[in-house]
Image (cartoon, rainbow, N blue to C red; front, side):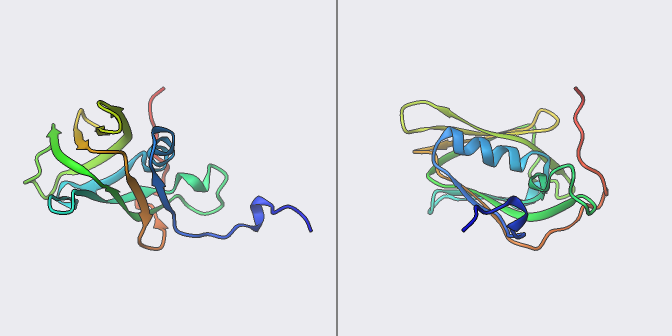
Length: 155
């Protein structure tokens, strides 16, 4: 018997969860540069769930990936949400496309705190949560990124 090799892996949709700040850091890195229309976010108050339908850049494929850059439709869901506030977002404008830069957790009164979704252009979404419970699930097959380029950031 030999150890599994990276090459033995197969392409599979992501289905990840985060229950602490370290787990959330992984989800944040996978969501960096995801884009979504302002109309694709929802808060279900009865279920205490906030969700975003993202067009996520597939960073996990790495720079050496042999095909053109890809995106995939992904659901980012945050549970135990008690309140939602936004800054710099016009949710009524269906043409507004937002770009997610990071997802972080600021603990207030353990295990409660705030999940902060930082957006490009000084936008932000702050979710008051009872506890950190976040999931990320790919819901479509990957598709070629319309820009055919990897997102870039000034250094």
